[in-house]
Image (cartoon, rainbow, N blue to C red; front, side):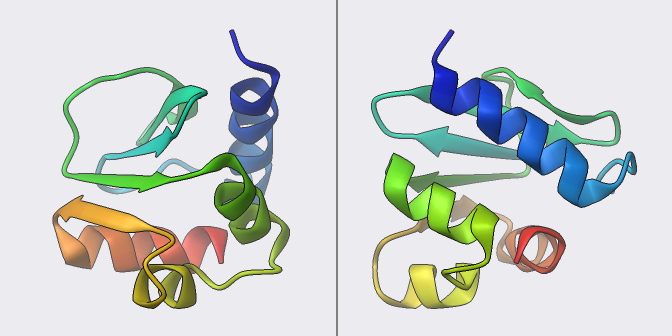
Length: 96
């Protein structure tokens, strides 16, 4: 498994503070793999979800660290969203 994915799962779980997410979302980190976030927290996976967010590793890292707002990443084309936009916005507030 990719070190980027492993670190991202840990960071997402830490940001959520042990709380799950009311829907389901998948982060696809280009060239690295994918992470599923749902009621159980974040984990490595490629399940079907309500929304899929795709970005490169640098963009994803910047969003997790707070250097890049997820909405700004989307508006600038660095983050693509496929599926439930409301769920994406809810997740953005969790990680942003």
